[in-house]
Image (cartoon, rainbow, N blue to C red; front, side, top):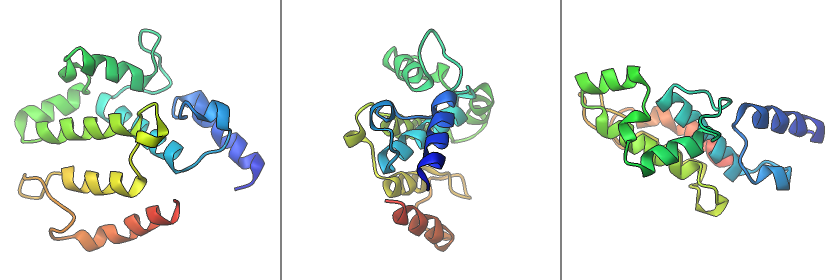
Length: 155
């Protein structure tokens, strides 16, 4: 990516709330800043809130962390997801996905997981076809190989 393109991507990401905190100093994206952005996207999907919207003066990761800290975790999830959780066995998957997203948006880049680890964890969290938790070793793992190898090339 050219320097100009990288600058444009960083400006857009920051304006929308996806930019990792350290990018304001480093000015260069890397695998850990990408994981932060992925964590924000996951939080956006779980909460139904835009990362561009500040809630009580906090960005989306800060807001979610504050709600979880107060043990009001069920208040974090989008109402549509909660309706689905009430009718099926997805409550654990939601909580595991929330924990993973919070790990991705940790303020310290060194604590954030690697992208390939995020993929592995998401594959383990996903509900199986029969409603149980599936793993990448169970049927259909081959369909995930291209995504995993693509993620490995970016690091």
